Image (cartoon, rainbow, N blue to C red):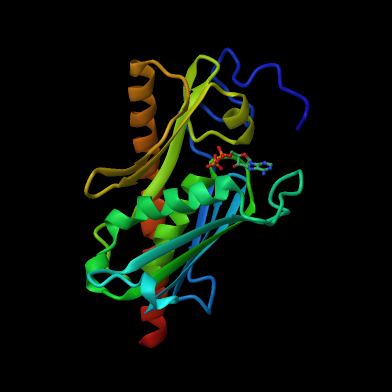
Length: 244
Ligand code: ADP
């Protein structure tokens, strides 16, 4: 990892892992993977491997945190010490505190929080293996875990990043592109409502490049959303077949 590659993208626009600029990493999603959770999902997004579990709606502890008019959504993003090459301290880092907040704020607009006053929904995200773009993959998995828990939602949030590597706007940056590239724009989307629930930017882009990156990220989100929905439907088709 310490050897810096000479070029992140070659003259033909081929990236280090062989992808074209507008190509996503391979994505595999599974739902209902944790039997003790009310809803759960597992995602492999490139080399990222992430588990999300949703617990609730349930009683709020401590009680004074309960909200009288809606559900309390709590999210925790955690990276396992073995998820990166250098051991990560198991203590919560500032980055994990930020990403927990970012995930919560991305999901909140999609959930009918007002249906469950004085209850809590806890969403735990465990990153087992990280390779850049874990916040987006975590949001994609967390939204599915909430859906799998049967919580009424306006839409299923999905997330993907785009950014700039050397002089090219690219979709779905992996770790090396994230670290050595010049900008990263993670975006979360409610695809049916066409509403953005997260937009961040790390790095420098011109206004035109920013627009290009946002549009590319939205396209990426739509492709991942199709995989999300297929996965969820497949699970419920299976359940129906068992019941018959
Ligand atoms: P995101 O995972 O959403 O892209 P960052 O941009 O903060 O969030 O992190 C980029 C990548 O850096 C992560 O996906 C992970 O591969 C790596 N990384 C993050 N924290 C650490 C850490 N403590 N040690 C080693 N690598 C890390």
